[in-house]
Image: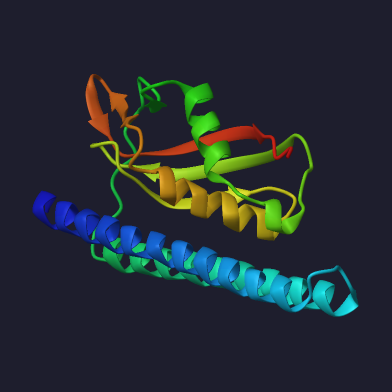
Length: 189
């Protein structure tokens, strides 16, 4: 049973890291197309504005598709594993360098300049599953803007391996848990 769970988690993380490259492809495609657009229309006009909007929508759609693929793969990988009994948690999960450090890392990984989005502070609720080894999966972001939430979720997948989470504990033993973090992010330029 433990081997099956470990195999499922390894497959989830290898697939998820492949999906991070989908975010990078979307970014690169957007940058390439926007540069071409600016060459064609060096001065702002109605047509350039319309094309910028279409490119922005395309990038948002690419991010959402990549996140959907990650979610589907995580569901497939954990479908074979029965849900664990919820142990009484005696110590909550925490980011090794602290919540402020995690929030800073996440904030730095989010690039919304192309959206011209600057609501400060932007309040979200970040929710994910943390296994007994400190690996995060099943990430969900809730905030007021669905498109911005998708980019925050993608940023989480991008930074997931840049720091370590300490899993929750039950009587001194690491256990699977759901982490629920209310955060305020700043997107000032």
